[in-house]
Structures are given as C-alpha cells and as structure tokens.
Image (tube, rainbow, N blue to C red):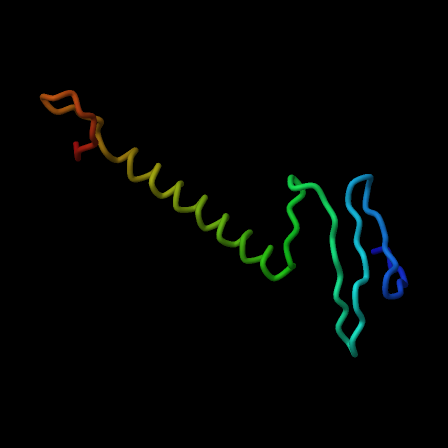
Length: 87
C-alpha cells in the first residue's frame, strides 16, 4: 500500500485519467473529490463488497436454473411455443 500525506486542496493522480483531491479535513473525517472518466467505476469499499456478494449470488442462481433446466425435457406446443416439461 502506498501511503501519502496531502493537505486540503492538494491532490494526487492515479494513472493518466483519475485525480483525487482533498476537499476538506474535519476531525477524523476527510472529504475527497474524484475526477475520473465515466467508464471508471468508483465505489465506497462497503458498497463494492455488497455488489460482489450480490454478483456471486446471481451467478449461483443462474447455475441453479441451468441445473433445473437440465432435468427437464425441451418441448413445443401446437402453436410452436417452446417450453420445458418433466420427462
């Protein structure tokens, strides 16, 4: 981990297109501003962890759907509508 000391109004760059600015320091809180292109995703750590967990659960749900579909037999009704049925 790189550790830097910055004062209010000072900044640092990450790569060529991300800039982090110290906007305010109050007690043990620091307010920062981040300038980055829209394609750079920026999340607070706690939000990012929640998103990762939700994505893992969504993938698990897709696996369950695939497993269920593998137990069913593809079929088609008289109108040509496709569906799955128990063998």
